[in-house]
Image (tube, rainbow, N blue to C red; front, side, top):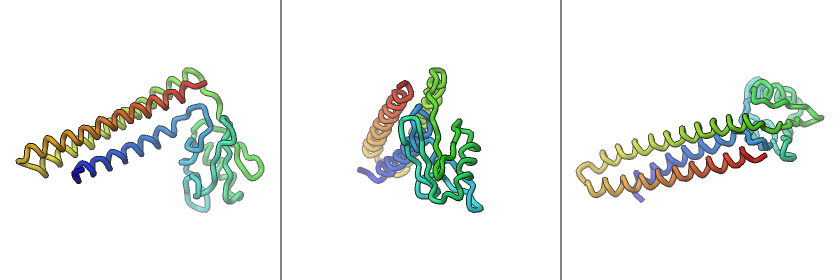
Length: 183
């Protein structure tokens, strides 16, 4: 594979990683650690993400409950306040040395709103992929100026990468939509 095509593939993979983490923040009515792990908590005179290995471990004890176990129980109330301040619709309850969050079931209307938001995020991902393609095509024309056969071959190679990525994005969307529609 040509270095420009490899570079394009790497940029597109970064876009996919961003999109995957963005989609993980959309509630599906199930308790998953990704719903809260990026919430910023003020503690120790600074701020840090709740993510595993920074302040606490986050686990789903069942389909409707998240359990947050702080590494240092002295900051348990800061974690509780941070989750409340994040305004994500969760009510954290301190239970001894841990925090429990019950994830309420989603209404049909809320599920449709989340599907609409998810589709918007997917479209933004596709726009980013098209931007990477546009930059790659410009780079190809500059790099291989006057060598039409190489330009055509690389443009086809980049377009194939983009087409495969768009199919992958659509599959991610279909999977997330199925998760959102499950009762």
